[in-house]
Image (tube, rainbow, N blue to C red; front, side):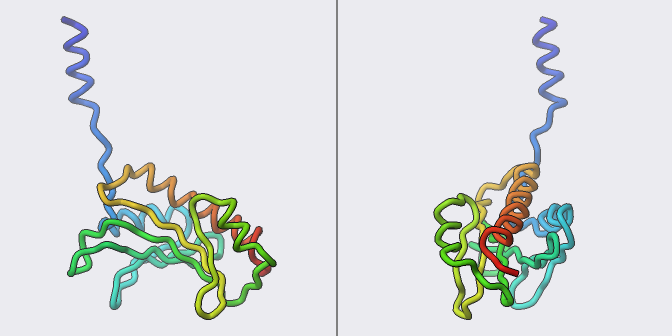
Length: 148
């Protein structure tokens, strides 16, 4: 009997962590601020503009409804217009790295992107860890691929 009461008490006091959805821009920008500066930018579309260790990046919202709400995914994005890419570095990056993909854009600038599925929400700690993966990816991309 005591065990059942203890389990019931534990169950009522233990709370499931609230999930963060892609539309929770305030929560996402707050988490991003834990790694550097970040602001919500509004124009034709809403996005987050951030800076980690001197690198400017954006978080874009995708798979949203017609009003730009109820988004299902986000994308981290960074581009460098003043960088030289080490020979064969983009191919090596895409072959050897799992989370962030790289390419040269239409203006021949190197780009790093990382997509995040948030269709059913993710734990706050998981999204914070994802932002840390983005930070690590930016750092490695700058050292392994770019000549700044």
